[in-house]
Image (spheres, rainbow over the protein chains, first blue to last red):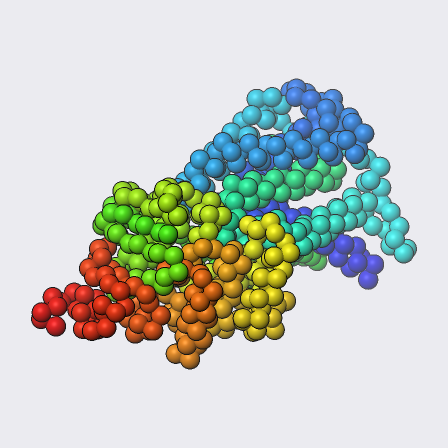
Length: 304
Length: 239
């Protein structure tokens, strides 16, 4: 039973993380019909901003050396600014082209950012230690829970709640949801296109920054491809949730995260290396039964 | 109020409108009718700023507006309810109406206008907190109209308000449109069928293959055979 609860906490932690990335992807898709593959690299850049650009395997700290509140602020700010710059330079000028062009542009941005990191930091993985105190297990009602898992779960759930409140309760949040569902209609009612798109990118940057920190605390390593797996999982989450649907993205995130942790915990030992294959098999099964995703919206349709 | 002159618009190499002239005067209800593919929806999309005309000009209250985006034009007093109503299905009725009133700064007035539309469409008050996607077709059309009224437009354009609605529901919709016009709102309505047009129209344009083939005041078109002839593309003599 105790083992099950620990697995459950892991599952909710990972599910919340995927839900956050999926929400970032879903918001940008909603307002722009862009599947932003560069989301992965926002995450990576955020992680690398912790250290000073050198080729060393154990580099000295840049933002990582600051007091934690300032560190979080600086990392999140850099990633947000980066997301806004990519929107301005690589996506906004292409807004009226077809989705394929936007998609290709997002690949270009992604590889550009990866190359940039290689140029300044070298291509080899690095080790970095922040939040070492957090990795100690903590006791909750007699249960020993990994400190990082607990932190991830708390932060991700809090962010999710804040984001949902923002989307539901504020005027800008309601505009953003309206625009994500039906961009043309929102513009007809006066929702400023450039502004909501910028806000969607800013949110994806903020989430990218926070998630990158959580990942570094968890793994202690920096790698130019570190953002890819979580982002790929989040793409699957948005697709099985019903692309364009924000509640669907959250639901999909939890499904993928929980599946992944439970397969890891309960598959027979010799099958665990195939965990990802298991998750993707289930994703394919879900899509075979509901190709349109679990929650369908009209946002999935082409815009005028 | 609205003047469209020799407007040409289309999608890529397909020209949907080939030099269209349309005039709407303050307080009028102007109908544009025509068969499928005549260019009716393109006309409204272009006026509202969703599409940019390739030639010609559009004037609204005296100023050139072609080439301006919809978010600018709605602040100038233009509102469009596109074909298929396009309510925000995942938002609540209340949130839909809030987005409609978003461009206005006068919050006290917005509140009294909100009460007014909820009195006009009582079903929306009943479903105020509910998700709009669960409304019936007629209720969604009422929500779309209510949402646009909260913009307090000078000119409301509607693309096929009767599309997919039962005759009884169409009666209600037309009834509310008539009442709105009586309060001074100018209407430009596109319909595919000529059936209901006569009861509300001040003036009618018939659009076919991207051109205006007939226009006239209601009084001039009481002989519906001319209207039908233009609509179906016979010469009037043969009809």
